[in-house]
Each structure stands twice: as structure tokens, then as C-alpha cells.
Image (tube, rainbow, N blue to C red; front, top):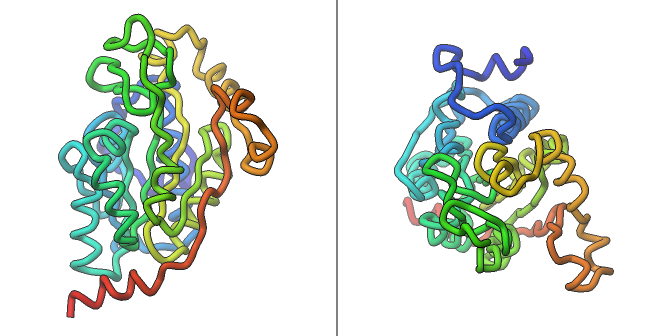
Length: 266
């Protein structure tokens, strides 16, 4: 663990429960590095998380933290931000926590445009509860609840949140960790709701069941199957099948709506 990351961790909570090679650790590291580079005070920073492997992240980070119920992290974060708008509020979720049971909160947080920065670590599986398929499991891939292949198309989290009105939306992967750090900073500095989706790896359940190889091989898979936004515009639907688009998907000014919401506090 590097000096910068160690500075923002509760060492008394270590060792963590994450499996070797899990992408959540790298994304936690990206978050604390972004907070460090932004120069934010620990006592003015809040990290909220829900339930699941990613949900445990707030337990390890040395800020004001809240480990909430399944799917409700954004609801708690909204209350915190409205109660004290001076706080820097970050939310760390998994794809199941954030896009399944928490999907409605995700959409309406984007619609309301509350000034919160959310990070979804998308490893395409429910890792903590037995490897069930999630809203983002690719079609045809195996999970404990889809032994013959997932029959459903995956939810496109970033595009869905962008269409709901978020001020800033980006998608990267663990392979693009420097871009993840940059986007967390950009999202925080953009007034309104920000969402950074990070394609992650779960070598224990998703990788092993689908024979994707070692954690490092799964990260190489992320590199090989990511397509920059500009290039994706020149590709057909067939060419994009099985790929994921990376980059900043939405960046816009909705500050007037945000001001209106905060004015309701009187």
C-alpha cells in the first residue's frame, strides 16, 4: 500500500475481505488519490456505501463514512448533502447495489441533480451473495443463477444515467485507472450529480465461472474490449457487440436546477 493511500485508510480495519485480484481495491485507491489531489479535508468529506463487496469500502476509508442498507446509499447521501451542502459527498456502489435494488435511487439522483459524486464498480456479478447474475452481466455469460448463460441484455449504466439528466457521466475500467482518477476529480468539480462507472473484475465468481483467466488476464480483457467514444461512433452495432464504450459520456451545466433544489432548504 503506497504512502498516499495508507494516509486515507483505517489500518485497524485491515486486512480487508476482498478476494485477491478484485478490482474494488484499485477503485478505492483511485478514489482516495482523487480526493488527495483535490486537496479535500477529511473532516469535510463523506463516503457512503451500500451492501455487497463494494459496499464494504466505506469501512476501510478514513473519512466520515456511512455503510447503509442495500440499494439505499444514494438516498442516505442525498439526505447528508441537503442537510449540509458544504460537505463533499462521494458514494461507492457495486452494479447490483447501485443498478438493481438501487436503480430507482440512481435515476432520480441524476434527475434531481444533487451535488454528489457516485462511483459504481461494475464487475457484472453479485460477488458477496453467491455469484448471481446482475443487471450488467453480459448476455450469454454464466452465473450461479444462469447456469446456461444469462438470457437478458445488460443494462448500460452510464448511458441510462446520462439520459436521466446527470451533469457528468463517464465510463472507464480498472485498466484505465489514471482516467478513473481524472474523471472522479472532474465529476466532483462539475456542479450537480456525477457518475463514474468503472468496469471491474471479479476473478472469484465471474472470472472463474466464465473461464476468463487470472485477474491480470481479466484486466487485459478490459483493454481489448474497450472502445473510445469517438471510435465507437464509426462502428456498427455488430462491431460494438460485446464491447464497452469508454470516455466522458456527458458533461453539462444544470446548475440552475441544483440551485433551485438547495433553495428549498430555506
